[in-house]
Image 1 (cartoon, rainbow, N blue to C red):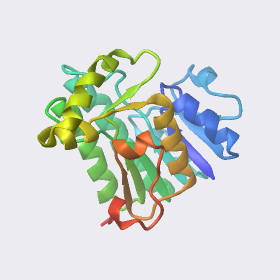
Image 2: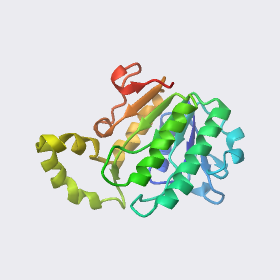
Image 3: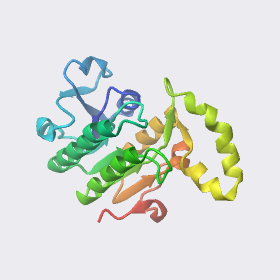
Image 4: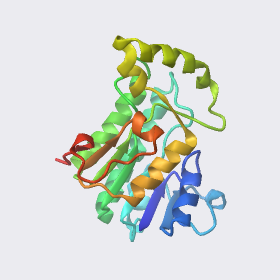
Length: 227
C-alpha cells in the first residue's frame, strides 16, 4: 500500500514507519522543514504545515491510507489551549487533505472515553472522530488511554489500583476501558490497521490494543456506519 503519515517523527510515528517500510509499503511523511532527517531511510518526506491542509493536500497522493499522529506531546491537564491549537487544527487539516486526495482508509488515534478527567482532550479527540465521520471517510479509530514507553513510565504506579478496580463490579468496566497499553502494542495495532483497511468505521479499544488485535472486516461488534 501507499501510506501517508502525519506526525512521522514522533514517539509512535517513527517506529511505525520503520515497520511499514519493512512490510513493503510505500511511505510518505508530513514533517516540518529541517525535521526530515529524523525520518527512517526509505521514507519520502513532505515538507509542509500540519495545521494547514493547503500546504500539503496536493501531495498526499498516491497514498491510499492516511495515518494521523499529530498532537501535543505528553497530554495533561492545563493544556486545553494547545489541544485546540494543535490537535484539533491538525485533524481538521488532515480530514480536508485526505478528502481532497481521495484517501480510501483513514487511521486516527483518538482516546478512550468516557473518563472522569482530561475533558478538554477528550472533547477535541471526539470532535476529530466526528469530523472523519462527517467527511464520509472509511476509518479505523484507535482509542488508547495512556501509552507506556520511553519517557512515559509514571503510570506504572497505578497498576495495583487498576487491579483492585477490576475486582469491583462498579469500576470493572472503567478499569478495562481506561487501562494502560504498551508502546509496542500501540505501534503493532497501527501496523495491523494499515494492513487491513476498514469499510465504514472500525473502533479499536484498549483491550484490543493490548492484544494488538484489529477486528476482522465486517465484524459488526466493532464497526459503525460511516454515515
